[in-house]
Amino acid sequence: MKVLLVGDGARENALADALGSSPKGYKVYAVSSFINPGINEIVNKTGGKYFKGNINSPEFIKEVIREVNPDFGVIGPEDPLFHGVANAFREEGLPVVGPDKECAMIERSKVWMRELMWKYNIPGRLRFKAFSDLKEAINFILEYGGSIAVKPSEQVGGKGVKVVADLQAYLSQEKRNAIARGIDGIAGYVSDKVKIIVEEKVDGPEYTLHVLTDGYSFLPLPLAQDYKHAYEDGIGPETGGMGSISGPEYGLPFINDEEYKRSFEIVKMTAEAIKKEVGKDYIGILSGQMMLTGVWGPTIIEYYSRLGDPEASAIIPRIESDFGEVLELLATRRLNKAKIEVNPKPSVVRALAPLGYPLNRTMASNHRISVDLQKMRELGCKVYFGSVALEGMQLVTKGSRALEIVAIDEDFEKASDKLDKCLNYVSSDTKLIVRHDIGRTVREQVEKAEIVRYTYKSREAKGTLGVTADWSPNGGLW
Ligand code: GLY
Image (cartoon, rainbow, N blue to C red; front, side, top):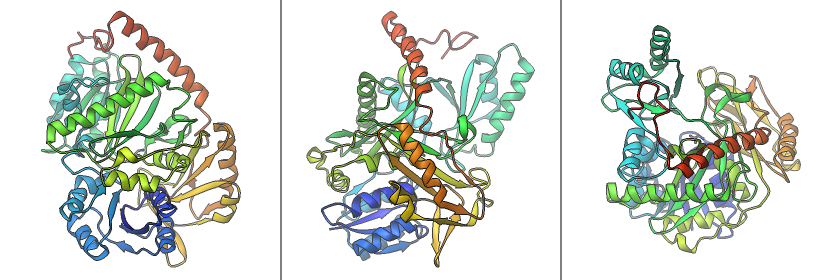
């Protein structure tokens, strides 16, 4: 059988790996904007073909579909989904992993997502307000303030901009200046479509729950956690993710079984609400980017309409059953036949990004990078190629996260030690940013979760879960 994979990052390398190593013997065809060396190896090994072009163009994808005539497709990133590439597959009569663009609104617009959660009474929903006018947003924040997060309503300028204002109501002028500075980062993106969204700010350990659904059945994947900030200890600008952890078993040490079940219920309810709202089944992967908060318990921060990256790199290598076949069963809407068996040992992923990422992509581009794959594999690490192209015989950075390296071991510390050794086998003519703390902060997060859990559990017992009076110092009007 032939499968056509869309996308060019480390997540797609992990998906290609699962498809290419399936006992079903899929021929992997790929389409991406550059030749990803990891995907290329799998395409060559399985006898497929690689196409280079605009992955956001449904017309171009249809041309590739007509040439390849695949049995099914898998779409990795969000942008092709937003542009209707899943619709294009289905218009050509082909099953595909990936929701139609109407359903992908759950990721594309935070306003759409939040309104949906309120309309359908889905638990774990944050209070928010959306503005098209900067001055109105600033006045609102000044008047009703407290701790808030300010974001653009749609992903803009890459992986989305987030600005958090944690402000003292009595410092009026300072507060006004701080808000103006914060919103400044978003102001340039505001348009007819993109609004400013102001949300209540929450705190707690974050985690990702991916749920596979074909519109009939729902199959959750093991939890993962993404490390978003560029530098160690969670400082620096937000990135697409500098690494991730998953496990042991199906969970994470700081999320208990009941919280896992509640999170699953929230994501399931959301998929069902999307169907009611747009009149189409959600066929693909719906990812809850969640936080355990004292106000709400399991809470949705945002949704992805696909696998997270680098979360996928932490989860896919832990799946011991045939994940390639699971993807086929999902695309062809027979997910009730799918099984997922997971290696109980946890995994740690670290991304390597050239200096300049994420704020200066030009600075992070066109650097040579060398990887001793053989040595890393001998040490027991897996390597997925991300934003790095094969140009002649040379690997050249493309401005984003170049590699994701994965280790699975008895515990997070041992997996992290393994990664430290593997990192000696990557070199570049630029500095590579890597977070060595990934996989080494689990205990702190367990402690943080205990405090948060105590808070939301006592609120729940008193019937005050989600009650807001303490959130807004000027009256709690939301
Ligand atoms: N982990 C962040 C993302 O997938 O966008």
